[in-house]
Amino acid sequence: MKEELSCGTVSCQTNLDQNYWDNQWQKKETGWDIGYSSPAIEEYILQYPNKEAKILIPGCGNGYEAEFLWNLGFRNITVLDIAPNAVEILENKYKDKVGISVICEDFFQHEGNYELVIEQTFFCAIPTLLRNQYASKMHELLNENGRIIGVMFNRNFEKKGPPFGGSIPEYQFIFKKYFEIQKMEECYNSIEARKGSEIFINLKKNKMKANMGSFDRIIRLLIAAIIAYLFYIHYISGVFGIVLVVVAVVFALTSFIGFCPLYRLLGMNTCKKN
Ligand SMILES: C[S@@+](CC[C@H](N)C(=O)[O-])C[C@H]1O[C@@H](n2cnc3c(N)ncnc32)[C@H](O)[C@@H]1O
Image (cartoon, rainbow, N blue to C red):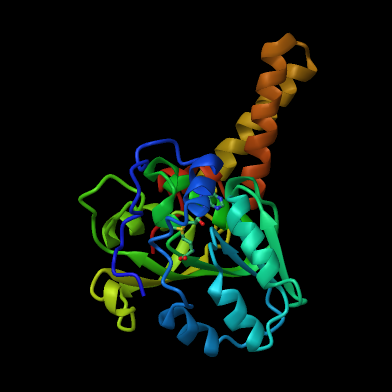
């Protein structure tokens, strides 16, 4: 087991792109690798009821959890990493294990639909500026009842990352827009080297909960109707007219479903408070 939590490299300040990560793998500078699947994640998986679940492990590195899942009978597992050198190792390791797909891709470009995403030292590896994008991408990749589970650092690092640390309030702020935070608390079964510096997360995807009150919906419909009428009588036309018609369509649609994605991002809600 490695005691060192940092990436242990001199190139921590360079762009964290495919080259950077592939270099780490090529030089075998994988100080984050604990050498087996995380006990906290194993404990969660052991009680997970649906063996048919589509499961994604992004930024998986050696992807030990995939093997653990496979041994338990899960057969719909995708492991994904941006580094071709890591993926080569995985392809060899899992070549006889039908039910584990290995993908070499940037997580942010990945398309798919999963029930469960397993997080371990991937979130802390991406630039902090992309954290919001990470949360929204996870939301997009998960199905209606989907969730992210796993471990995240609950500490900061002296050296410039990766890894990039953080705290529960920071994570709550990022994830609450997209997820119901069912668990985000100190991890009691971390590995020795990470004891006291990790939290366990269990984040359930937010449904498109209505965030628009009746008054708001009526106003939107009225505005949409007025625009449609003005366009119809050629009072507005050209590019300006088309832009307004697009706005009218968005207003009508959001009013119809009672949900405004922009409100979600801004943390707004015009529904009547109980
Ligand atoms: C700190 S390592 C963690 C590996 C593994 N999860 C573990 O705990 O051992 C981060 C991994 O994420 C991969 N990675 C970094 N950025 C990525 C991205 N945008 N898309 C997919 N994989 C990425 C790296 O190649 C590296 O293997």
